[in-house]
Image 1 (cartoon, rainbow, N blue to C red):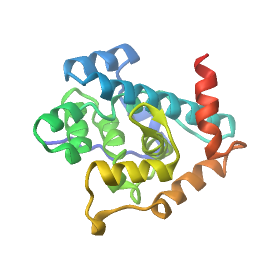
Image 2: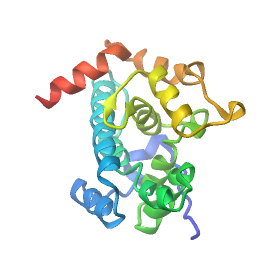
Image 3: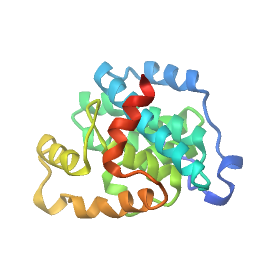
Length: 196
């Protein structure tokens, strides 16, 4: 499947990206048979991402809340397929292909960027927020970066030469929280309080 060009111009982000509605996004998750546990994870990533996006907007940053909302919902749209094919480490690429096929290439690009492999290539706030939010959610629980890195390293048996460390992820966390009046450790409590 050939992908349409999907690189984004952060200055014109809101004007150039076509998005599904939230209802259409949920329908796409159902269409691609996203497993219940992956859906639960995606919904928690969505809560964290939307929370951070709102806080950054309040702090004066230009962030598309709709892009963050849809990308965080759809970032693992290809994961159930790649699990079945035993190619789980390629799910970010499949997410981009699926969303391009469905008519949302730019959104697909944001979803592709949630992979830890892309940590040094993140350009827009939307990419950074979705990547970071996913990194903070282990299954459906909000955890620290250190705990999540340990989990991913064990679960996917990542070779030492390819492992990312807490130090690799810290610059993104620092960039996000340097704009906010909250600390990384506050996220779990604040996001869970919003649900009640």
